[in-house]
Image (cartoon, rainbow, N blue to C red):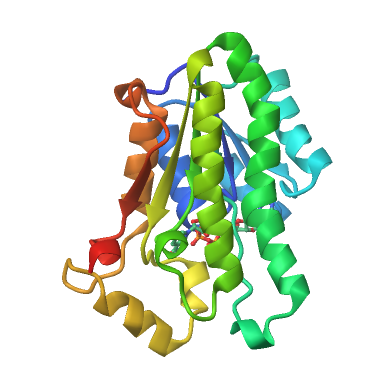
Length: 243
Ligand SMILES: NC(=O)c1ccc[n+]([C@@H]2O[C@H](COP(=O)([O-])OP(=O)(O)OC[C@H]3O[C@@H](n4cnc5c(N)ncnc54)[C@H](O)[C@@H]3O)[C@@H](O)[C@H]2O)c1
């Protein structure tokens, strides 16, 4: 699953799942472009991995375009895009501010749309590309307190399948990963009872997943080993979805 000579953009790469994907791709010798809104953290991981680090808000048109332009300027091609950046603004619907709904949809859904549109132009020309969208089991199951987040992650599945249909004939594969409960800063912030409810559904001993578990699937989807797979949504959830 060597990625030597391939250029990969990973958004939200400063920590958690994005950072684990960056580390895994670095071991496979990819040319890495790491984007995150957290400037200090993205610079530090980029330095450590010998990658290009960009402080950018991928939910803005300029921010998304800048990341793709920098990748092309630095490496001359773009084969892999991992749309991983995501946020939560949890509240029950009756108490949810419209702003919290909009913020989550903007980063989790508009961001991947903007990044994919900018990246696909180059991939189509090369007649090869891999786009990987980080959805969630919550997109298929819903979750009390996360209506905005669940809607964004379900929307990402629709975006994934539509892009797969538009781009498949040009050699661009588009797939989604649906993680379950992965131990990161994002899940650390959840209330204790919510964590327990999630973990009770994990068929594999009630244990949380690790960011590295998600990174292994991201690597497979980024590599030539998965060239016949497109439009798929693949869970990494210890069986939570079917529990
Ligand atoms: N942790 C889980 O259990 C879990 C489960 C399912 C799906 N996911 C998804 O996986 C992805 C990564 O999750 P995580 O747990 O590592 O989260 P995290 O909060 O640890 O990291 C997310 C990163 O995205 C960055 N980011 C946020 N907004 C951004 C923006 N506008 N532009 C650029 N970067 C931005 C943050 O600065 C942060 O570094 C997210 O899309 C999340 O929804 C996580």
